[in-house]
Length: 324
Image 1 (cartoon, helix red, strand yellow):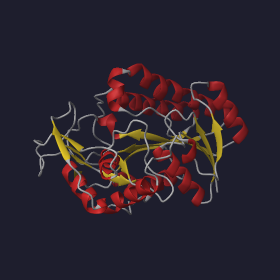
Image 2 (spheres, helix red, strand yellow; image 1 turned 135 degrees about the vertical axis):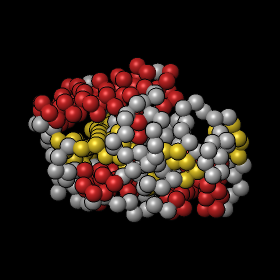
Image 3 (cartoon, helix red, strand yellow; image 1 turned 120 degrees about the horizontal axis):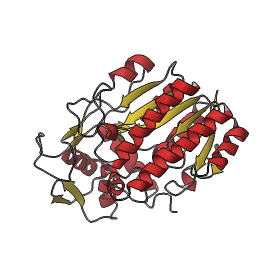
Image 4 (cartoon, helix red, strand yellow; image 1 turned 45 degrees about the vertical axis):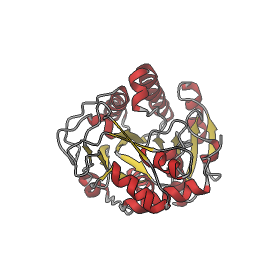
């Protein structure tokens, strides 16, 4: 049993990782400023520290008091579109504030970190599946900010003995019985389609129907949030620093997602077709052979219907999300 501090533990992915850590017997502290996360998304078994990584003195005090064995770092801004209009926000929060965390960890003697990175570091990939050998060439400040932090991690590992694992996500989806996806600005496909089924939106939107894919819409690799959490827990035991891509190795198109949402909810979901968005690759599918081989990770919830069923059950139970 370890003592883990989770930054951004009130957010979608962070909250479910906190829940799974607690279920596995770990002691968990959550550090969050609640600008994007929700107080109700923090498991009642966790200890909560409200604070902002922008204040280096606060995170240093928390680390010195809580004395974690490791940190899971989720706290970040993650809207690609916003990063194109407010790059300074993304470099300040995702890089500078992350550096505050790393330096505080170094000074407090905390030597292990699991970092929530992103497939956006690869930009438009040369091929799919996307494995760790492909060049990283971000096409937006969000992806660039995550890549910069990955580079900083490597130097902290080399110079200060930090053992880190950076997990590059593809499309996180789904929910547990207690925690789900409730972003203040929702950009993800599945929750936005389910909002139509809930009567909270008039129609689902498809951006581009003329891609070189079987049905003309973009294909993405969706991974159940519980499988994502299991990768984080395995990463805590990694024998050495590493970068891993996380996905199922399969893909589902936008139209397939909408059709599955119709089947799961039993609702008619109208669709509005819009032009392509700039920079949307036709296919983003992860190659996860490395983490399977080195850490023994294997996704157990690969069926897209099961993923959507879990999300729908949560949204039906909490139609207004966390309500804050």
